[in-house]
Image (cartoon, rainbow, N blue to C red; front, side, top):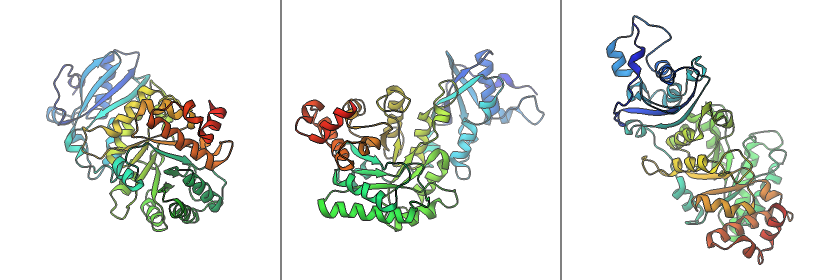
Length: 412
């Protein structure tokens, strides 16, 4: 039986409570309707030829519907019953909305730009344990942007050298530190030794100054080990955990977030996302990943630098990522958006004008590269944040703040 025409429902009104609705940008030599139908067919009930086992009842109940094509963007609705959340979860969701379609011969390029989930699916995920408000409460920082660092060099420091960096950063006023995404359990800096040394450094900062800081330990590892590794890190004093979500998988974030033994925030890094998000004509938009991370329970997520830092991207796309982190239309706590990648004190003023104050600003080289060292780099970052919050121009504020003045002189 041939049913290719079934999948075309242009102009049909779709109940958003009964469908997962996706937006696909298409590049094709075919008619756009044919290309959109190819996606709907492949990702729901169809195959490349007519088959005797496909009937009208299956099509009506489980077939995807192409409901709109505007310019090169197709809207495709998948019945909620096509998805299995208890056994399947995000891996199964992605196999439907972002699966074989990328290899379809009918398409020269296709990009999943956005996804909208019905309440029936959203309610089966718990979202963040902490989110923005929870992290602010831990850090006793109710209003100002969080300001942090990534320890540099990325690899090579011993646990004690690593901890000294965190101590200097905390004394300089930073609220957050984090492992680099490439640092795990290498012999020069074993995870357990690093956790203990960093915890002691954070305690020293609090004892000496009263300042509270947290540091995200990278627990990214094999799926069957990640909860065990996270529990051990927490037991040894980790105040935050970090997961590389694309390399580990969304289910890894969810496993940590929903495990009752994990009682610290989860910082989600997006390393490798550019392999799927960078090409504007093919792949998956970061916006989709942002929504999935929030569903899975990430408390903080890298969203970009809004065209200010070193990473490719721009304010428009990164604002969409930020909105996904805080959108009130989903039943979860808001995620702390993290801006990281080529940041330094002189960039905080333009960044905060775009993002507002509910943001975590991370700098690696922008702290460690300060002419007077890590402590001064941390102070320059905090001074820049204070100036932005007070709406005082940086050059004016820097007159009485040596560390910020030196940073501006070096970087811009």
